[in-house]
Image (tube, rainbow, N blue to C red; front, side, top):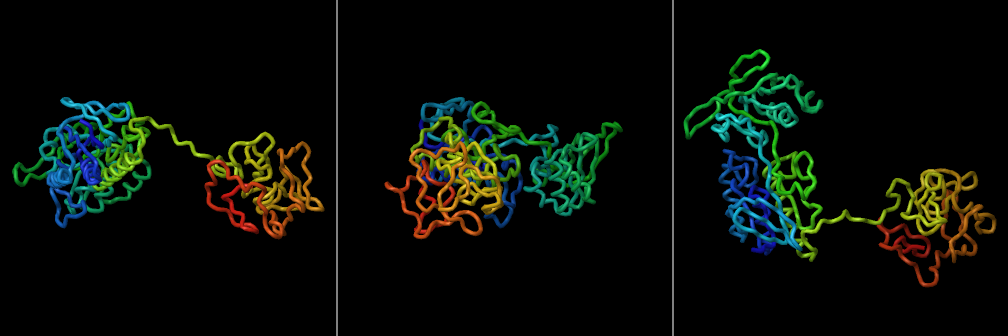
Length: 463
């Protein structure tokens, strides 16, 4: 079964990618996995997703997304992908029961929250137990909450909640936080945050009513004192980390802290990533959806470009721009006899004119010959001349000892006349193109047209 776009994952990123891919007229497959529709299915209420005046239940939101994807033509299959391979001009996606091929592939497998692993945590998940303060914090306005963890995520969650809740208790199993010092400093300034050191949450208490299940407190064990205590609260936020689901691409893409290092476009042609699988910072439904949209649009553009799929691309090699390697005024590869007039000294690179330079910061005439000294000063200061000396009387140039002009070079009769502020001014009447016209440099110029000189010479033509 061959598709234009195969999307692995069915959270907000995957379903949004499916909507955009199908609406673009592409045959689109969404492989939802054994636990479809992402982490929002475990969230009781969502009130920060645009378009809903009243909070919407997480499972309902994901059901709406999936129905929308199917209504525009995307095909959703409840199969778990076990292998992703590069074929000959296509991708091979293998599940436990089928093998699919696609011209492009979008990996939107997301990430999984690391949970405590205690039974009561599972019981109250979505009913007082959360992993996202940004998503659920507003439900606990003016209430007491507990945050579990000691890294950047936990401290950021605690600080965020301190602006909404009455009191925040941060429970950490060690005697010092692992968060960045700047975050710890912000935490210490909060008067409504209390830190319980060397402590672990062993149990979560709450009501057992099926229709009105809610958290009422936690049981905390202090390892140093070897005792238990109860902390009353209305919500528990677990912030001990996330596990990005990148096993499928660990042999194909470079990873950083478990997440794909690439954002959106990868080094493999036709392979894209979207959502929390590459996002270690925001991890929001709306940002995941935005990634899915962008990935689908890029996949469509890729197919329309006619490029070959499933090929590892080398980094693009672009011609060097002026001074790109740090030598202001340099021009790429150096000819044997050429020099670049940078900061009053010579460089091992230059362009194809021995006297060509740009914005030299130490010596030489601006956009002219490397000059300087006491006789003529360049735009940004004097310096020792490199290449031609300053014009001598009569307008011709005296070559520095050892300098050989390139073959065919003949100074213009009358020479250039230095202007008072340094640099050179075109002689009266402007430039006269040499026979055969100007020859543009290979690849053209890349930093826009230069100011016009005299009779209309522009930087788009090289002399």
